[in-house]
Every structure is written in structure tokens, then in C-alpha cells.
Length: 363
Image (tube, rainbow, N blue to C red):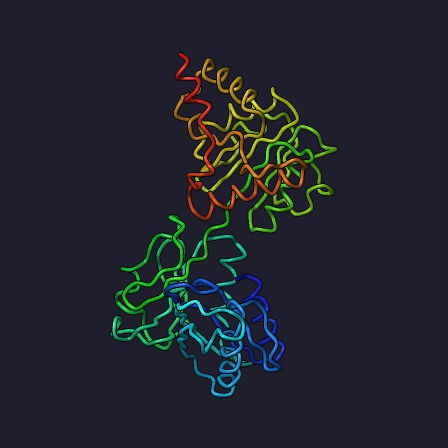
């Protein structure tokens, strides 16, 4: 979304009209879900996508007409033979689109605020009135930006927010998906997660590259400057060089932090897990064989780490995809991180048998 709004601002600032289009509601089977966005330019080019196919082509055609008209509009498409025959997208679902034309000289304060929030990595929710019958005091196509605290930060609307706007809001910290309540579409932009990578070796480096691509703020900890440096981690938000125990002790770790332990040895892994196991991090994962992980767990139990803290550790981390190479291992790890970030949990089939349960059963 950040790239979409940046492109919109560039176009309008440079004297070009642009139509902002967004998928605000879906029902049934559709090629994209609510929250997808696309810009349409006067020459017919686009940035972003609403799912492709005939629907996208029709949205572009109507958006170009609205560039002349200047008024925002909601459009509904039924994915039947009219909008799917040519490309096989006869899904049977329904898609509702917002088309909001923006012309040179228009007030861009709404987009400026939206962009500030996204660049800061803060969570927010865009609310769009889509059904006047269910929201009688609202105006269809009006847009409101709600900050992470649940207050209306900005509006792209002539009218005041409808009474039901805040009542239907789900806290963005709960990481909700897009939803519709009382005739209002809520499109959350989730707070960016920090990923703390302990270990700047080959696996840590590849994970950092992929994690940055999927919008994690990457922090890296290692005791070797020749590994933990800007050349090897050009997109890391923070690099911490120093002994693992002192580097992790007192480090800011909150409920929006995800952490993985991929150091070069058993002792460093154990040291890192000792400091991370009982933090409020939303995810802690550790690489290694089940035998190594078991030995580390047994040591930490003797050192007083609570069993409940170890029960939530994801070890061995990464989805089982038969990984052999470093890139494959990195893909398996980042896929698990994405699942936990976006779903708040891992699919049941992806959960390995608990090593801690094995230890308990033998005691």
C-alpha cells in the first residue's frame, strides 16, 4: 500500500490525474480479497492489481471515465460469465470496488497522513462507507483513516464520520483481516513486525533478505563484526555487534517482536534462548536438530527457565519442505514467520511434535 500511495502522490504532484481503486468487499470465491489496491493513469497504465482478468479491465475502463467526472464511486461485479469467460475466472463470487479519482491541485492531506503512518510502520485502519441502507448516516464512498488508538486521524469525506464507524472497529493490534460491519468496509494496515535475527551467518543473511521483502523490520545480533555489518545486511534497520548475552540483555523486545536463533553453535543458541524464552516476544524460533534442541531445553530447565516459556518455542523452526540448501532453509523459515504474523498461529499440520512434552513424559 505504501508504494501505491507514493505513486499516487508523485503523479498528482507532477500534474497528472490518477484514479485510486480498491477492493472493499468480497463474497464467495474471488481472485483477490478486500484490501487490494490499484492506480489507473490517464494513458491506461496501472500500478498494483485487483486480481487481473476481465474485472480489472472493466474497472480500468470505468476509472478512466471517472477521471473526467471527478466523483468517487462504488462498483459491484458478479464473477459470472460476463466477467470471467475469457480468462477462466468464473468463480461465482462478488467483488465491490471503490474508484476514487484524484486530480492535480486536489487536497492530498488524507494521503499524506496515510503515507506517514505506513512509513512509520504504525498500524491503522481505513474505513469506507459502502452501504447506505446499513449505515444511514453515512455517505457511500466516504473514506476515514483510523489510527492505532482507534481515533479518526483524517478523512476523505465531506461529512462527519457515521455513528457506527468506531463501534464496528476491531483493534489493529489484534491483526484483523479486512471485514464489513454495519455497511462499512474496514481495511486494516497492520503494524510492521520487528524480526530479531540472532546469528549473522549464511542462514541469518538469507532470512534477512527475504524478511525485508515481506515487510519485516530486521534487527541482527552477532558477536562478529565481519559478519554483522551493513555490506551483508544492507536492508537491516539495526545491527548489534557484541557478545550475545549482553546484546540481548535489556534489548527492547515487545509483543510485536518475532525472533529467530540461527547462531553458529550449540552454546550460542542456548545463550540466546536463555535471554529470549521468557520475553513477551510473539514468536521465538530456534534452528537445529531435535537432539540439539532437547539438550538445550534440558539445560534451561535446570537453570530455572519455566516449562511454559519453553512450550511456546518453535523448534526446530521452519516449515518441513525437505529443505537442503541455505536458500531453501530461509524460505521455510520466512514462510513460517509470515503464517504466524498473518494468522496469529501455525496451521495444525505444520506443528512439529513437542520436544518439551517428550522430556516431561520421561521424567
